[in-house]
Image 1 (tube, rainbow, N blue to C red):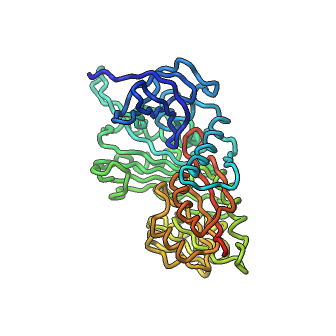
Image 2: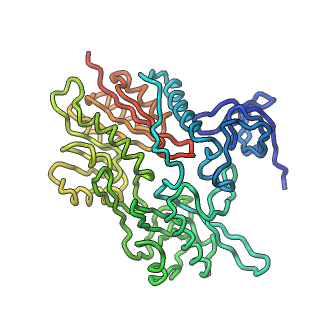
Image 3: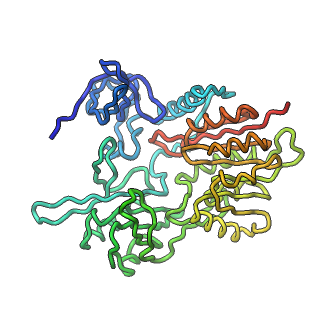
Length: 444
């Protein structure tokens, strides 16, 4: 076995991806997980390039005053690598990363960024996807079966009994499914993942993704005995690393969850998009509502709303106003969106559009307020071009990636100015940040 290469260095600051950065003796930059600014550490190199390396801390020689003991010492690097810092430091670093993202794109924010938190650091996730791991037991020559996460910095896996980020109902159900499958002739080679979602009331649904079309891997009677309201067994093409639905093999019970967002009821399924931290999401919606329901300068009335990248409609249907167009590319999400529209009796003033946002540009025009909540890649270039061409009076931009958001805002600043911004800690103990920017068109 090839011996792992190591290096000792002092870490300097936190960078956009969430790693700490330092400089090796040969001048190369080192992007490091498991370390904090000011710490002298030894790292195991996981990637080597001519100008930089990546690594994971194996020993801390001089610890930062911000360092704490992680709640999940064996698996935190896989799920929540910021468990090593106190929470006030996390809040500070996230605000700094927002500021740095906009500075790098030469965008001046009107005020110093702040990050909202409801202070709940653990047990907030209502969705978790576990992988599987098997190993041969030398005593019995049988294969074990364990829940697992992928090990950061390698292709290996780490076995777990749950994660402190998840609601306890999720961890309980995951162990029940694991223990049930241990009684079956299956190993991790037959399985891909198990996806579990949990509503605010504690009701759970699950999807077991298989690489092989196995019969009776879970029977109806066994499914009924689980602490879940329903679940599905799904064949997922083994050539795809992701858990995609190729064929639904079996369904048990009720596989649709319901939750209220700002007192508006929503239906959603396991594979559909739905926010994982509803209390903090509701605060973001409340803040956005103030800008959606108030007419921008130069508009005589509050305009109709176009909600791009809308998921199941949790923004547009809660705070979008009376007349809303919802644009979403995921067909499963749109089906649930349509059911939500019908359940709310909004068929006459709400339109659901199944399309990529860049293929629904005709819905952006000068009389509409536009809401965008894109994936991490940010806005499609065609959407930015259409916004600059039609100049809707206000753009409300919620982002899960301040770096691409800052890039888009820099392009839009040709005709827009920032009137409000606010960060949100949707994902405590991780480097992920949500950021809201409200843009008003510049009147000449």
